[in-house]
Length: 317
Ligand SMILES: Cc1cc2nc3c(=O)[nH]c(=O)nc-3n(C[C@H](O)[C@H](O)[C@H](O)COP(=O)(O)OP(=O)(O)OC[C@H]3O[C@@H](n4cnc5c(N)ncnc54)[C@H](O)[C@@H]3O)c2cc1C
Image 1 (cartoon, rainbow, N blue to C red):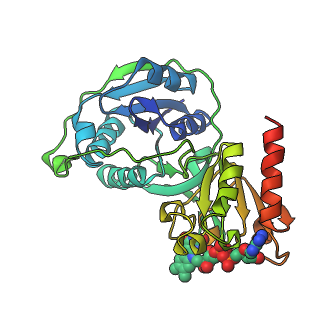
Image 2 (image 1 turned 90 degrees about the horizontal axis):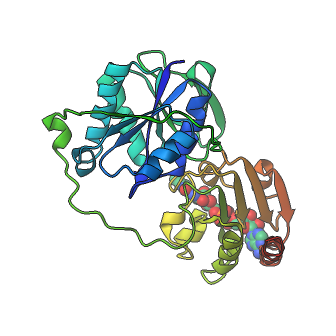
């Protein structure tokens, strides 16, 4: 079967979950080959990539791949595309991943699909567009299909691959070295998972009522090991930081489970969450539009429902 390149997302030597999802997806379409860009690959990282099906691990360990912004990674992939003729290239649909995908498409004269939420036979991608109102099936018709897949689109499933390592020497152009990374500042992060990567997201909206009341949402999130999200009404009111806003002008999430509490379900909010696998809505208004979208709905006051839910979840631990 043809090789499918998967660009590895890694932080401090650790492989991010989205890469395991991409390897799982690649396995259903061909032979996955992981591409590690930058120094610092560890034995654990290699073992993880092999555990999730990487047949090959291409390692380009040059520090140039970490020291310059984005462009070198696109050049690395372009060199692999021309040298290995893969059937497709998969990257995570993160801000960086999408930029790499775009640059790679130009360099290889190929088509690119971003924000895919699924990828099937013949590399036909599923996309959710127009604020999530329309589902589209798209296919690259020119060159090597380059597909940026949203985190959480596939559940990662282990299935061992050979994990054969191959060093890749990279020759970077001067153009790829025009923007250098001068500093990395670690974002203060609590124990909760990253919003766009979390398998479960619990979001609160205007119905939460105040900044203090967001502790109710946080309590359920912590019981479930989930990330906390918020509607724009809640972030604009200053009840929760803007970086947690879900929606058209916030983050796009695609978790296995999305719990919306006190959120009406405006189109701009839906745009950021409606590809979630299972949606649960808690709202006191039975006519709230969020119920049209929800798989499960609870009509009730979130201040009563959410603490009870948290208690039940805690009991089962
Ligand atoms: C260009 C543009 C971009 C936008 N981008 C975004 C975006 O990225 N994300 C986003 O979220 N919005 C976005 N919006 C705003 C969006 O249109 C809505 O105004 C917003 O999503 C509403 O937030 P909400 O559902 O929390 O509030 P509301 O619409 O006010 O709904 C609150 C809900 O809470 C329920 N409720 C109240 N009290 C309780 C209670 N005690 N228990 C249970 N339920 C209760 C009510 O019944 C109601 O359904 C954007 C708007 C524009 C114009």
